[in-house]
Image 1 (cartoon, protein in one colour):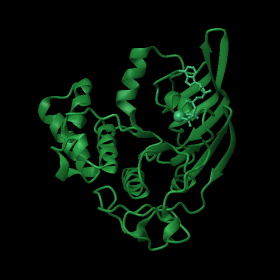
Image 2 (cartoon, helix red, strand yellow):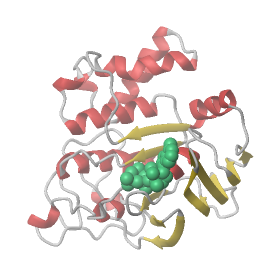
Image 3 (cartoon, helix red, strand yellow):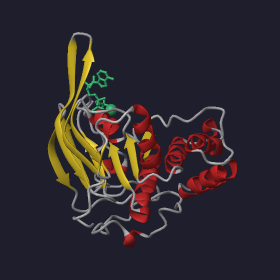
Length: 286
Ligand SMILES: Nc1ncnc2c1ncn2[C@@H]1O[C@H](COP(=O)(O)OP(=O)(O)OP(=O)(O)O)[C@@H](O)[C@H]1O
Ligand SMILES: [Mg+2]
């Protein structure tokens, strides 16, 4: 990582106050954070601590009440909605806990439809969507409806949709929250692959400490403030059940210094103490 590069994300003393009638809700209270290009990190914290608020600000879905947000060096703290939308289209891909796929719409269409807003022609939309679905290992599921896909596969369609715009940053708010541990491992393997192979910046929110240990850094939020910035010495490596094109590297070619993993079973989140405990440990924060 080149430390002299401009951080891709720089939050400076960010606050967010929601006005609920007479009552002010202080969702963020002076949070500062720098993220370098190509980092993969986690935001953790109890329910209501401000994680989604921070993700929404980072993703230009919402604006801070105070402080400055520099995205790729550009001050985006006070832009108009249409300017924010342009930046979102250019730089950010979102993944949500509940997948948010259109029902009665195939995987391929779910990925192509948003590309209409990027002003691409039909052929290019199809190409981009196929490529993105291939990147998440779903080239054999193009014409399946969401109901014909497993939870993990649905989330991978959602990741493909996020990728199709060729963003530089992926923001995933509890992407494994609705998944069993094996599907969660597939999703984490895809996200790690995007980070490792394509040098995408990946930020995720989770309540699960095992998921968090698959990233290089954990930001702890409490009551709207960052209380702890923890580096993960040897990030765990998720193994997908079916290798995807962004995750074809063997365990030897893992994130820096992370090769000492247990063999684990296919689809398992690695790093668990015993085969039984590989089941995702829920964070217990809510
Ligand atoms: N649109 C809104 N209007 C008013 N208050 C809000 C709004 N969004 C969030 N809040 C409040 O801001 C605080 C932070 O909420 P946020 O959604 O960021 O928490 P979170 O850490 O993501 O929690 P969870 O783990 O439950 O998803 C909470 O007290 C919440 O009630
Ligand atoms: Mg949230």
